[in-house]
Structure formats: structure tokens, C-alpha cells
Image (cartoon, rainbow, N blue to C red; front, side, top):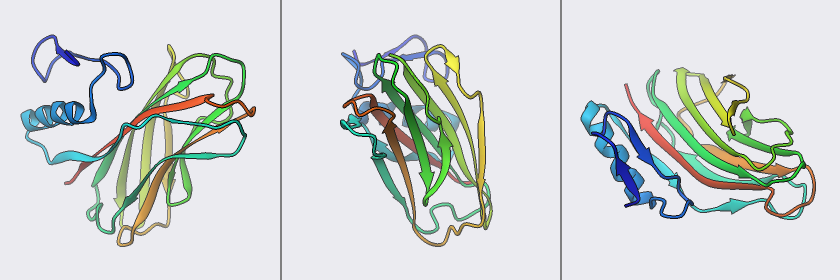
Length: 193
């Protein structure tokens, strides 16, 4: 079974990662998240899912992985938010590697150039409308067994929520080695106040 429950949707759940042998499909993950959201009776729903495996090429050029146009007024009220989740695998070598998240051309998360060696990264973030002109973010970044950095906080100001904005992820090799960085999935949930 791709998704294995230990108890009920609101307690401990073991989920195999997308891309792992026997891992879930996007629709299974979406159904599981919707069950949890329904149980909490909140106004959160799946906004974007990209389960395609994306890798850097044999170059040192910044490579676009996932791109989502956030339509005008998607975050219409202060407190509206996107919950962001991504999984990245770094090749087992000493090369520098860098993963970034952008909001309309502004970097809102950056690992900086790091010699990640054969580890997975789980990035979890809250991207929210603080005011009519300020986007704020908080990201927790877990790489291997370490949290690096523990928390990344940014603010983009001024910005406008009444026009389309592009949210994207990228990878950049420090050495021209293909597949140094593999993004195995990006999910965003949208919440409204």
C-alpha cells in the first residue's frame, strides 16, 4: 500500500516519499491531505502539485524546476497563505549545490552554495500576505539529519497581490555534473482567512 496509516488521519501517519519505490501518486497525496483538512474543517486546499522528477544538467547555470503563476487576488486578504513543501535529493559527491525559491523574481529561500553530499532535503514553508503590500515567509529546512538553517524568514515589500506573480524553484550546480540536484516534488496548499 502506498500510504500506510498507523492510526487515524489526525495522529501519526507514515507516508512513503514520492519517487521512492512504492511511493504514492499525486492523487493519493492529494486525497490524504484533503482527508486531514476535512477533519480539521479548515479552508485549506491543494493549490499546486508538481510530482515530476527534475534535475540539473551538466552545467553551472541556474535551472528552473517548478513554476506556478499565482493568479491575481489568490491572496486577497491579509493572512491568506500558501503552505509550501518540497523534497530535493543531492548527489553523493563533494560538489557545491544550491536550491532556491522565488516570489516574482525575489529570492524567498536560498540554501546558498553548500557541499550537500548524498542527502535529502525537506523544505517546509509558509508564504503569507502580511499586508496589502508585504509578502512574508517562514521556511524550515531539514537536510539529512540536520536543520540548515533552522528557520529562514524573509519579507518582500512592496509587492502587489492584485496582479499575477510567479512562484518558482531552481537548482544550481557548483560543478558541471548532471543530476547533482534532483527535485522530487513540490506541493502548495492554499489557506484563506
